[in-house]
Length: 514
Image (cartoon, rainbow, N blue to C red; front, side, top):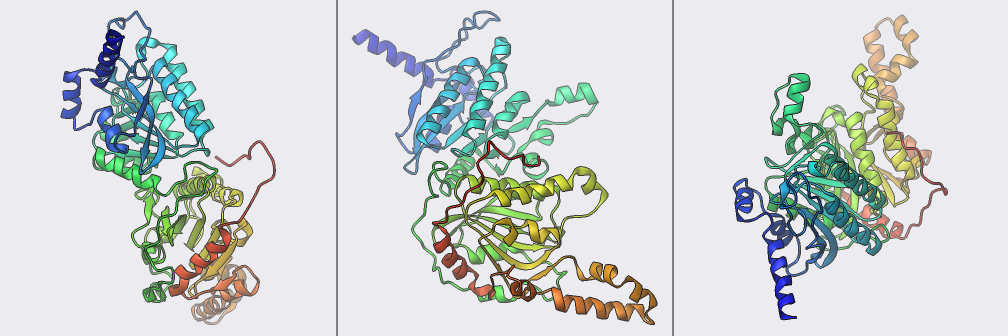
């Protein structure tokens, strides 16, 4: 028995060494932690329960017979973050480049199945050279098994991917199927084909960062939601993100002990919106004033800047926040911002986060590029997501809510529970200049002074329609409120709506425009 215990201890010790001291030193030289160091930094101390530590591949050809490592290049198990249970898998680049294998798939799929059954989030720490070539179609099938688990877990438990190294080819689709991707600048990359293949096929010269670095996917493609300067920052970000989320779709998000007066009024909000409706202001000022101080965690902060989405707390309760940003493109809706908003709304609905929408939008962005790019299809995603959502929904029209943007952005017709407006709200079918062109074309052509007549008609249209009172009179706005009272009104409204029970017709699934 003593010898057998010693054998077990030696095998466990081998597993902890990864690919060996040289490989570990090389990993550190690249500015990267090892897989076990990452797991230790992420989880509460002494909380990790490892599974599959001694699993190895059974490939004997291509020189693989002598390249067996306990764990086969991935660490899997369960632990706790701030006392809450999570499932974790961490690819070990020091072992065969972290290449994804049949054994890796079995291990990761196993903990994902257990996570779904137990109702705990799944966190993947990714650092892999891709499919293990020596296993041929087995490694491809391994990805297929993983994709199925990603899809089955979607909307059941939160899934977070932390990209801490390379990710190429078919490997990129697993993180793309998860809820959030966190990338580390300068050490993580995601692309379908690498620079060498692109050079051979198209003749383009491109480096790793320019092709698929953290900044590219956080600013250009929108594939990733977060970028961190280093690995420890990325792991801290994961912990912060999880603090807003429930363990699964059957739980409510966790409340923290309130630290901000729910009745706090910010008089600066009464003067924030400029008198000139074409003048921008920063919607982040509204968000920072209304929600618990310092609680706004912005998502996709560097992509589709004309829209803001993120998680915040209101009297300690987590909520989802959607807002237009007048500082960029006047807060207009375009293809990218439509995708950004729709995806976030559906996430919040899946995980029981109330949705608060702050509207200042002149409409959908016109133009050939947008039409050819499918703005109709992309814009419909917002409508679909809000209509589908059954969580508590509150809309606050801060300034412009024009045309289709008024309807799409959580209007009463989108099954929104409460709709408020500030006195600065402008709710109309279209802007006054466009409306006058349509309604009074003939009168303007006959006018003795067309310019003066146009100005008169524009002002008359603005006085009649570009205010919240006509909409309130028709019941489309529940109440016009003072900006300074927004926080208290939302706290009181959510106190009532928190027990709301909503439902959709029974069906296999809808056909969202994608």
